[in-house]
Length: 134
Image 1: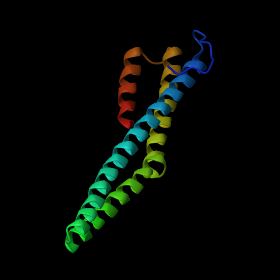
Image 2: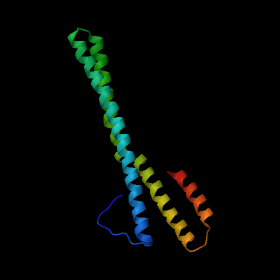
Image 3: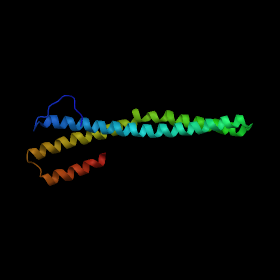
């Protein structure tokens, strides 16, 4: 778990909700970092192969191999450059909005459950529906 020097207070609703929001944000960040790393690694591999083809094309005089290798290398570089989309932009914003909406709605449901306005079964069904957002 994440700890920043807090002490857990049993029954402290605000503390538990804040902790869940932080955990949700951390999961979101981990997901985006994993996707960025995967795409960046793929781009690096493609770029390395392409520039290797270019070098081979110069070693054995083959202009076509050099040109194709250069194009493949540039394509790999573009894939690497594009991997930074995972840190900002619409995809991040949509994921972030979904997590925030999920947390907000779950808080409302917990409050209703604690006040006895809905049953535990209704709460669980509603939370399952909310998970479709993620």
